[in-house]
Image (cartoon, rainbow, N blue to C red):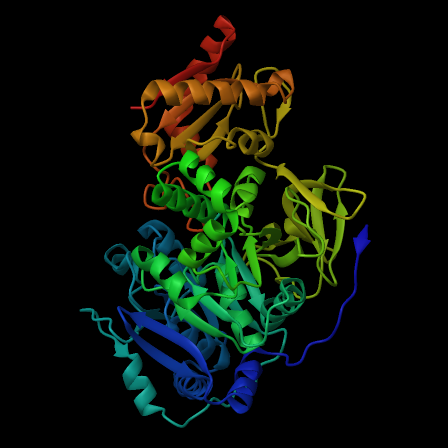
Length: 559
């Protein structure tokens, strides 16, 4: 068992932190919305007043009764203002992804007995509106117009201007139910408190060594716990400034103008940035030639283009990141740190500038303990864990055991205290040979090529394993013969490194990206293996059988 101990907190609730910042930094800008070249700013004083006014209205209307309030909006300043107003009134925020299908939205509304929907701009309103309970109230955020009965945010602020709620929060108050997107099954609502929001970020700030009043860019969904804590909560704790990405189409513009001091992206984001850089340079060979001539100059040019030329910490987490991808970025001066946390227990381990090993999730954060079960599963214990799953006592009992959070991830620790993930307990599968295969290491090895940007290893009950891969934008412009030769060579390299029963028998190539919209990716950009298997499983199993019979690696293009 490994463990460390750490320090104390300043304030105990998010509401107290916002009040502190309003008192100490009244005219400092906290939130920035962008529309074209125009910014709308909120100082800490402005924001605190608006939060209190809405919190007072909510308290008067619903009491401080832990009423569940769904918050459905793209990232914007009013998302954070609404969240803190709900919490400040003694009620509970239920964030909802703007990409959720109607069935999942209806499940969340019904399961949580939602009484109020705070609605901002969202892509899925046409689907969601037909699932609303008859008794639900609606508050629209500025700029949103709907036909349904509602009250506007502006009306509430005007009516309650100068007021503040009577409710005073406590550290262990339930403040949010965060539904995990999940790769399979019904989503679980993880119950968060002030403690589970604040304490993980206090220990993470020691790892990230952020400057005073850091700059943040919010572009990943705030409905996901990582963006909410790493950007929203951390900005409150550090009295930083948050600029909101206007849209995915303007991400590079917004990154360059914001110049965030802290930047988090799951592996898919780092892959997309890589593809964008290569597209701008023309090819990997062109980039290599440019780096050979002027490594420092080219690196600075790329970092400036991305707005990542003044960063304190670059983080990747949420899914395994191929080491090859990390090394690729490092050649450009982008030193990406791997870390680990999940909705149930945030920030358990991370690499730092002083202690870093690529391929590991780093060493344990302050105050975190780790044990590895007999099944090889990682279990963490730390202050500030979630308090269980909403209305799911049996699931809670499976995950939260005697203070330990069982992660569902397998792993090990090296002699220097670096923690390594080796796969998900439930992702392991047996081929027809009856031996277990762990997909992540094989996927990571196969991803070390110039042509693929997404991939997934299948093989449950197959004669051989089969890798399904999505070509990158650059690869789609290449001759098929070149691609086929390169991918088959990569499969041979991987097979030389793995046990016989895990070897790749076939490669399936597709040009259709896996996205949230086609439901192959979760809202947090994790691949849903069961969706890949549903789409490609039949042909993959047939290719695996033929490969075993013919004794060679096969390749097939998906239609």
